[in-house]
Image (cartoon, rainbow, N blue to C red; front, side):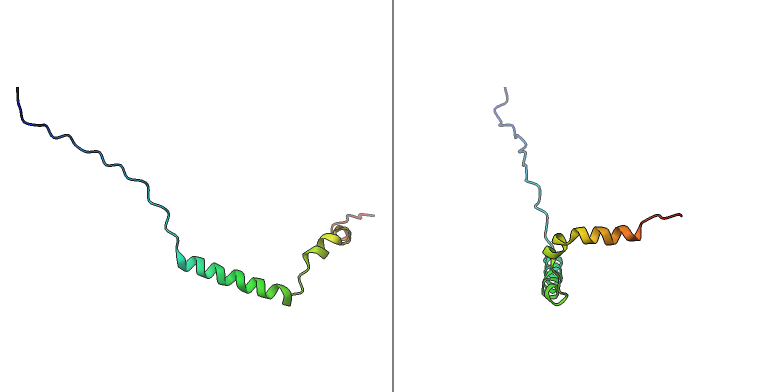
Amino acid sequence: MNSTPTAHPQVVMSLPEAPKRDTGKLLVWGIVLAILAMSWQGADMRPLELLRDSGNMLTYAASFFSARFS
């Protein structure tokens, strides 16, 4: 019998790397969204009125696509 200890290889498991966030891209997108948010009022955007008057918009859009072949 051999009295020397046998070396067992150690298995090292590592966790997958977390995806790196590109702070530059996040900063640019933040600036773009901030500019759009500030321009919302200047462009007189009122999404609730669009929903309230959607019947009128459907009538208006339908006049573009009406087929009258007479």
